[in-house]
Amino acid sequence: MGVPSSDALGSPSVVSRESNMWGVSLVRRALERFETLIALALAIASLAVLEAYLSSAGRLDVRLPFGPVPFAEWWSIGLKLGVQAAIGVTIAVLVIVGIVVAVRGLISWRQGVRTMAEASPESGPAQVEAVRRARTDHATTLWLFLVYVLAAIVVSGAFEVLNLGLSSANRVALPDMVVSIATGIASSLVLVAIYYFGARHLVELLFSISSPTGQRLLLRGRNFLLAGALVGVGAALAPVSWMFELAAVASLVIILIGVRRLSRAYALWLAGDRPPPAPLARYRPSPA
Image (cartoon, rainbow, N blue to C red; front, side, top):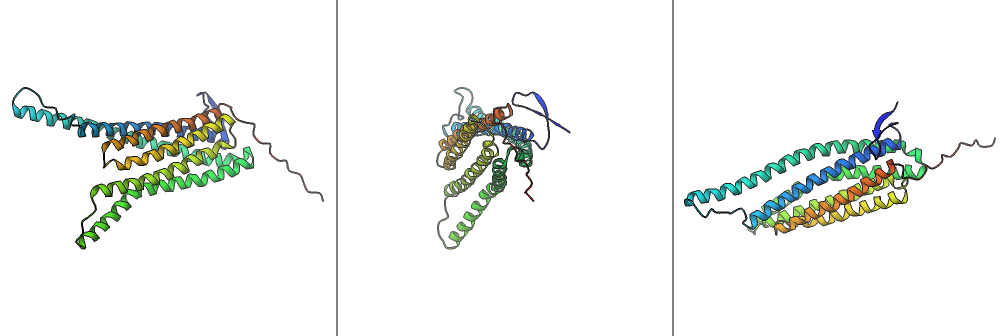
């Protein structure tokens, strides 16, 4: 019994759930949703930079040159609160949409990896081994995501304990800026590891059965993802200056380029730009 899916051009087709075609289409769907998620994150980061710039530069402290003094002061306060509230509400909406997109993407991603593992014998032993490594990296990526969520909590808690010790010893506690930067760096380094294993397994899933063009796109996509993750480490220095938040924007732009390269490689494979499958070895009985 077949399961409907779509090829790279959007035309429907019917394929088996155990086929590479179905698995690749699921992973590509996950990449498309991840692309949407990165675009949402980019919008959130851009709004955060805008709000930080307006606040630090005093652009929101606008005083009316006319009217009673109390009215002019309330106008300035109201304008600042109104702009900050609008940015905050917009970010909250984008976060909610992002959570929905992320959950749907994770489902497609997990199903795609599992299906490609089941169908890997279709393409020979090289693909079987590649998908085996990819599944290991897939599991590592998921575990690292949990570590990423806990990293900020653990590092912050460690600094709280350290500050309590310094306080009991009548020493000066560490500045909040130091704690914030250390927490940001720890979380960012875990995020770099997530992108490393995530990008590697997306390449491994398809590399051995891709055309040279597809392989180049996969490698370029992986490199962009890693470069973007490394650039994002600079955002941990945002407590020093709001301008370091631009690193988060630049990071997401680079990552978005990488995701599009990976998605394009999967789309090319679905469109038929791939080498023929490796012939399966025939069974030959041993001589009596």
